[in-house]
Each structure stands twice: as C-alpha cells, then as structure tokens.
Image (cartoon, rainbow, N blue to C red; front, side, top):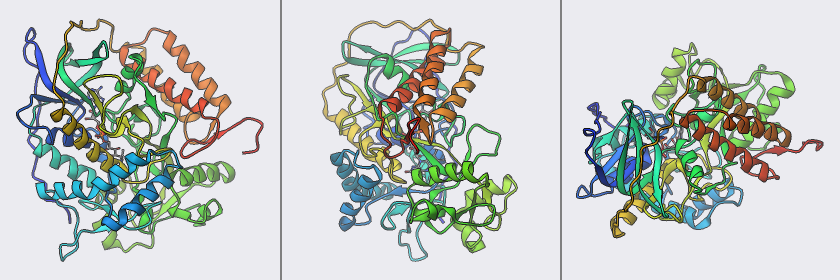
Length: 505
Ligand SMILES: Cc1cc2nc3c(=O)[nH]c(=O)nc-3n(C[C@H](O)[C@H](O)[C@H](O)COP(=O)(O)OP(=O)(O)OC[C@H]3O[C@@H](n4cnc5c(N)ncnc54)[C@H](O)[C@@H]3O)c2cc1C
C-alpha cells in the first residue's frame, strides 16, 4: 500500500566560509510541507536557500498520519467549505476557505503528476477516508497512516534548491518595513544571510507545552521574533488539543493515535468499556476534536476513570495494513493492537493561530516577508481546524507565495545589520523552559480560567524580567501572546474554552 519511497541521500550543507557575503533571492525558514512545496514551485533560476533547525525530517509534516483533505469533486467544494466553516465556529475567513477548497483538486493532481502515490484500491482508485466533522470521505492518505512521512520524503527528493540543516534562524533582518534576510546560528557561529524575500514556514508552537505531539524543532522562535518586531500575530488563543494521544512514553513528543482511527470506527471507552462521549455530544466519537478533548478531560476529572481508545472490533489484518505505523509504535510500548485498549489523554497538537498573512501569504506591512503553513494565520481555520485541512493549507499557500514572489519585481534592500551578541542559551534556561511548559499545560490548555491565565501571565512576565537566553526569551514572548489573547477572548468559542470564576461552567 502507498508510495514507493526511495532512500534519501542525507543532506547537510554548510555555510560558506566566514567573510563571504551570503545573498539569496529567497530564504525559506523551514522545510516541512509548506517550505518544501514553496521551494518546488520556485524556479531554479532563482537563488533559493531552505533552512531547518535539525535533521530535515524533524518537523510536524513528517509525523502527520491521517491524510490530506481534498474536495472529492467539484460538487463537494461547497460541502467541504461548509464543514470547514462550521469547524471554525464562524471565525474563518470565508474567502481563504474557498480559495483553499477550490485549489485542492489541482494541488492533488499536481502531486500525482510529479509522481506521488496516494493509497489506492487494487483497481488503482484513490482511497478516500473520513475524519471527525467531515460530512463525507475526502481525505487521501499514503503508506496507510504515514501520509506526512511519505509526502515529506517525496518533497525532499524533488527539492531543487540547496538546504542548510542544523541551523536556527535567530533573527529577521528588518529595516524601514522591508525584510532583508535572516540571522542564523549554525555550528556555534552566527551569520547574516541577505535575501530579497524571506518565507517563514517554521511551523507551530508545540514545545511550549508539557504534553504535545509535535517535533522537537517546533518551538515558536519565529513567532517570538515577529512579536519583538511588532509584527501582528492573530488568533493565538486558538490552540488545538488532540483527544487521542498516548502520553506515557518518556520522550517530549507524545504518540498520536490518528483521528482516522475514530473516523473508521474506534471507540473511546472508560474502565468498564462504557462509551461516555455520548453523554457530551450525540455524535460520540465523531464529534470535533475540541469537544472530544474537553469531554475526556472532564470525564477523567469527574469520575477518576482511565480513558482508552478501543480498536477491539477492527479486523486484525485490516488494522495492521491500514495503520501499520501506529501498530508498530504501540507494539514497542507493549500494546498489541487492535486487541489491547490504549490509555489516552488529550495533548497539544496544532496552532490554529499564527503570524497574520493575507491571501497571497504576505505578512502585512513588511515588504519581502511571507508566511505559510502552520506558522501562518490565513484565516482558513477560524476558531478550530477541521482535521487534515492543515497539510492542504500548507500546499495551497506555498504555491500562492511562490507565484507572488515570481511575479513581484525584486528590489533587495540597503542597510547594514550586525550579528547579535546576546547569549542564545544560558545554563539556567532548562529549568525555566520546563516550568514554562508546565504552566502552559496546566493553565493555558484545554479548560482555561481567568485566574489561571492571570497567574500564568504573571509567571511568564517574571521570567521575562530575568536574565534568559535569546531562544527562551522568544518562547516566552510567544507564550505571553497566547495567554494575553486567551484573556482577551472572554467567551468560549472553538478550541478556546474559558471558565469564569464564580460561574457554574
Ligand atoms: C503527529 C501529528 C499528526 C498530524 N497529522 C496530520 C494529518 O493527518 N493531516 C493534516 O492535515 N495535518 C496533520 N498534522 C498537522 C500538520 O502535520 C502540520 O500542521 C503541518 O505539517 C505543518 O507543516 P509546516 O510546513 O507548516 O511546518 P513543519 O512541518 O512543522 O516544519 C517546520 C520547519 O521549520 C523549521 N524551523 C522551525 N523553527 C526554525 C528556526 N528558528 N530556524 C530554522 N528552522 C526552523 C523546522 O526545523 C522544520 O523544518 C499533524 C501534526 C502532528 C504533529
């Protein structure tokens, strides 16, 4: 089942020798689906550099399981839009949603034409699955439950431009409303890289939370840099938590149990096998993930029951073929699926909000600066993301940005910048980073209270007033923005659920 992925040559490019000025037409921060697809759509005649923090594959795209949404056919576009708008609780930008849905079939055709193989049946027909809050089967997948990994490897193999790995962007070079490049830290050195265009494709904010499903490279540094420069972030209170995560493994990234499992019939049960979700929503397991997350959170607190994902009624062979990676990962943790029930908890999963962008992926008021993928707030998700819309969003807006860059005269920018001299990390940062994660999980996650948010804000401000390394400083700025946005939104909507002290809820 799925695409035939050839082994990838390990890539590690080094920065040229010190003293040499590094000048590019386009620098792309991040090589997940958004960064790579933008690169693929930028001609080789342009001088393009992709930068990523660690190994090229240490990104959320690599870990995506369920699939990528597409309107099934022209007739499904309006229904896909309706489902997306409903999931977003009326807060989506309807034009952005229409643009995404109308572009979806073309994007899928382009991937297939380039050689990507989605899962098909024996006759070669594409297999479409369904996830919560979708009205019909319209999600394509690859390698069973390894869509992200297959797509990511495919895009890496197709990438025509050089890539710098193990390099962290620690500043954006911005003067007089023009972005002129980035400052990068790599192999213990800091260098300036000039660029006529910078595309932010740096993903979400996962590492701010104690329990999350994200790659370890995803830590909101670029969000922090934007805040530092006065660049607007939008809907940052909208943080999505995934309901079915196995959180008992020791690593920072917790094992996701894809939404597609529930979509295809897995149950959520308590110690006695009782499907309590129907007490909360008539759709039960098919309710949107924020409702399911809150229900699990509440039921656990109310009853002290453990909560499990049960796949007991799946056929064993089908399960192993359809969800091979989940099967193997859970087997390594001692669970034999589909027979064993797996204890689950919600965990942070996806940043719905992000750096504000227009429909061309431009960051308003800063010439030469673009943002795409999970880092961006294009308005397609509103107050909540419909499952599997994010890979699609990354693809759609990557093309928009690439076209925009190709068709906009490049000016470059004047002015000299200096490499920063503050420490990136201090020995005391580790403890503070852990404290931040704990605060964000306990006070700024699934159920928020004004009192909890205020105390979180106070703790973050206290850390900001202390001596911290630049990378922690940037995380703290991003965390502060999330907390302040949550405090500002006094009503519960979408993924933002707030309880006011003294009220019954
Ligand atoms: C476990 C899991 C399962 C998911 N399943 C699905 C799914 O089935 N369908 C779906 O639509 N969505 C899914 N999602 C969400 C989706 O995978 C992400 O939203 C999407 O892949 C984000 O792509 P991206 O290109 O924006 O960022 P990412 O793929 O996260 O890439 C970010 C890149 O930025 C780089 N970077 C970050 N900061 C810096 C810096 N300071 N300097 C240099 N580089 C930097 C990183 O190294 C990385 O290369 C899932 C997410 C997770 C975590």
